[in-house]
Length: 180
Ligand SMILES: [Zn+2]
Image (tube, rainbow, N blue to C red; front, side, top):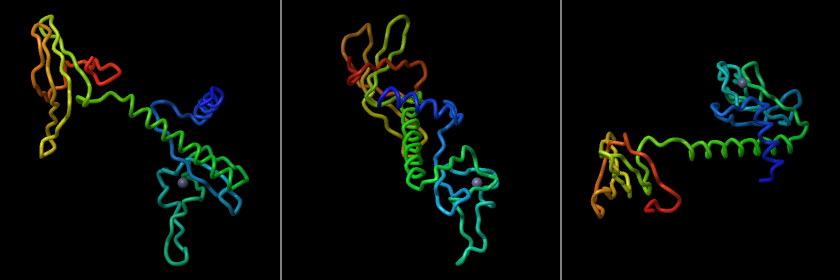
């Protein structure tokens, strides 16, 4: 991605008050005052959304009006005067939102051991290394156990090991397979 695109994207996200602790909205095309979906806005999750978006006398039964704009709908609502541009901008913004979500998932702090990672724990001034090969879950789904190999700094060699206690361990995995 070019530097200018990154800057323009960051400015746009900032302009619509998308902060780091807010999930990025999903966008939709909207029909504002024209007859065609030439505008765009975040998907409506307003409090009265279900009631206001309903067309009760729709031929063949009540139908939800996804493209319409009502009091419940969030801003910004952007009119492009073009169905092509509206569609394109919706796709572009949704791709941004997806990328942001993926990036967040990648940097989220895990709450348990991760396969392929190496962990260390201090033990009376020495270091225990735990190389996790896989994680299994008990049949009732209540317990997770990490299985792998353990090495103690005061003893040569590795021995098979498992742990269901994630506390006190520090992830020291470096690039590669974690066996460094
Ligand atoms: Zn709405």
